[in-house]
Amino acid sequence: MNQSAVEWQFEQLFNSFEKFNNGEYTFNDYLKRNLEIREQAKEMEKNNTDNKVIHFAEWLTKKHTSTLITLYEHFEEEYYNETFKSE
Image (cartoon, rainbow, N blue to C red; front, top):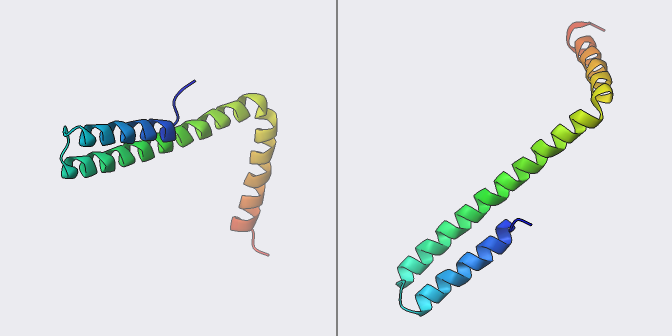
């Protein structure tokens, strides 16, 4: 199982604190590193969400192609009627 963004962030923040506590980081280094960790975790979560959407779309397409085509045709006709036909 892959590590979640939250788990990764917690681990990185803990490591950062240990380095600060051991004198390897100054306070400014510690703060800077924590901001970097936060941004990386946000990006990881965004990518994870994007991947879930992509996988769902692929699954939906494989499982329900005929349904999707029917919906597309329905909405295409509805769009045409609303856009180009006057009432």
